[in-house]
Length: 446
Image (cartoon, helix red, strand yellow):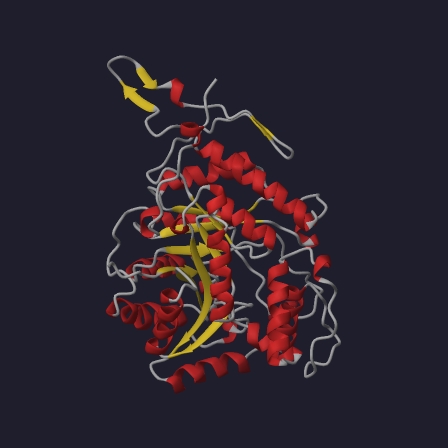
């Protein structure tokens, strides 16, 4: 029996995932928008044989007049642009960019991702998200969509994108110079999609890539999000604080695949995990405490307020959360709000303790310890049906990420839990995902 191995991605966010990373020794202002530095980190990820680099996105900056703005680094690259640059300085590692289905059009997204998937020789993935925050909508002359409507639009959006990616069959380019035929027109398809949200003719001016089409990634954990993932996603990033919750999510989501004609291995579930690694337990705990000591109160409160979609300004920091609005009134990520409320209730956290708890992981799970301790934990989740792998959130760059590559990865490799060399060229091969069925192979042509 072949031993199951972890799938591992790294979530790039500079100067790090901890809210106080910008104050931590070793992080530097000149690293923030520095392609040479980012290229170094990408090559380090590839040296560690990680399966992919992941970039999130946010379609608004925080309000400059809001509490904590001056203590929080509100900077974020447009992820697709950055991945294009990183594709040129790497050879094997997968590249996953986030793009919203709420404030974009399917044709533009399909064309961008297909183009970079070609240029990177089949290493691209699209993290499908919806956008529910009013500040995001205000940047696009829109009104926020209600939660269920966002997912209805997202469902059709992904369907259109997949049709466009399949509008060129893999052998459509003939390039017969002798007979003067460059393209077999019978293998290029106008999609003529007409739905509730979109009307798109097609085809794309971009042929199929080496991995056929980009990987579909999703991060939603609400009921609507899980159903969309079961129907469309090949990778799911999720947040789970306990192994019991993770197993329940894993079983639930994998169990939804059959009704869409899919197998359990067609979807990889990769919870986020925030790591602080030390050669000893004491070293790891010192690093964690140093990060906590550097959190400005305003920044911690602002981050928690943003995640809960509720302004906590003025509430006593050393008392429990006040009553929050019903979950139905949350316009953004409901699953994250529910998770944070559960964490606060189960641990009897004060507001201060809760913002310290999420200061690095932002609702994801936090592991602090030696490489052996962290490997034990990841192995348990893999081998007991809680995860197929993990999306790693380094506390800070460069040192926190170097600890992942130089300390943790060798320990996982020593145990046979992670590969020592890439065994393929494409992201689909890295994740052991089979090639998708071509849309026009199953739809009769008129």
